[in-house]
Image 1 (cartoon, helix red, strand yellow):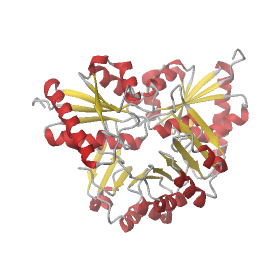
Image 2 (cartoon, chains in turn red, yellow):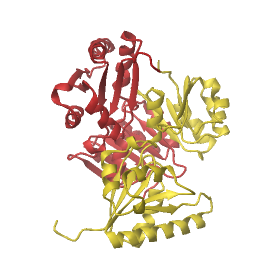
Image 3 (cartoon, chains in turn cyan, blue):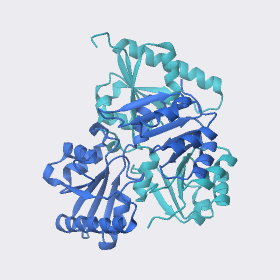
Length: 236
Length: 236
């Protein structure tokens, strides 16, 4: 409204892994942003590879997010990353942070944001939503996740057995974002009525592996895949 | 592999409502498809409005999906729609069906597909995943849906009270795709620990309305919104 514009941090959802599954708005922001931060552990991450389709290499800055449980180490890294983001915001007035999937689902973006906000109170953000991995997985498997009255539950790796069992009992579709043997056993206990499973990794990319399986094959197959969807009702 | 190419039905996810939230692949398919089917009740639907950004009007064909509970009427409409899709597939070799949100989530596409498949056994499909409405809602509200160990449940309007109560007890985030008063009462019963709610409609469009509310305001506000997200933990 005629006033001074606040520095703007853009959160860009990169989708499941295929550059063609970015939204038009995501591409627009990546092309225009003076700098684009990407989370990285070592080497070129898939996020960085996607971003480099749409912007110059010199505009990309890697941010290290240590994959450890020690909260003090994580907090220190987030502090350091927030400082880097703020110095770019101060210099250029805007920048983007880009990560895989949809940012509202378990993304480092929302771990980082409170630290940025604390250092820089006058800050605007715009979040560009994206395609979640499990939607790409269902598309590749050529089946719906849910129809009609179906209830879905989305379960990350670290959920407790009690919660998983209770949720699986009442949901028609369970989406497991990481697979571990104890989850499979829990599902087998409660999931006698489950009829269809999809196991997948690297959905939408050249390395995609998708398998629509019988529920009985789960325990064996689960060693090889990263994402699993189990459904009470079989589709076709 | 050198063989005859099968007729191809493209399922195009249109995302939450803003044309800029289509994926590059969705736009590519809409531009190239000889004909694009859109579900319609009366007048120009939002799906049709979005599709018309990317293709010529004469390429768009409306398909009537009656919003009734009578399964016989619905089946008859699906039969009729499938016949129209098959005749276009036979004539042009390919066509697209485009609908809002992500097609894996409660979409008419998967209601229609078995009828098309029955009429035309030799058929390829490609499904283009999209941005679900609840991801756009979280982006507009500028909060994450889930972080860390959080478990999400997605509940359509018609779920029974018993299931909703049990799910809400074990999930950290509940996404309600339609709101009705009895669901609100159920959530109030079990959700004493819920701390944050987002109510929204028309997310990502010019008519967007988003409200991040206190859980106590739910019952009053729920009359005016279409989508609701309740979270056990408050974000910022």
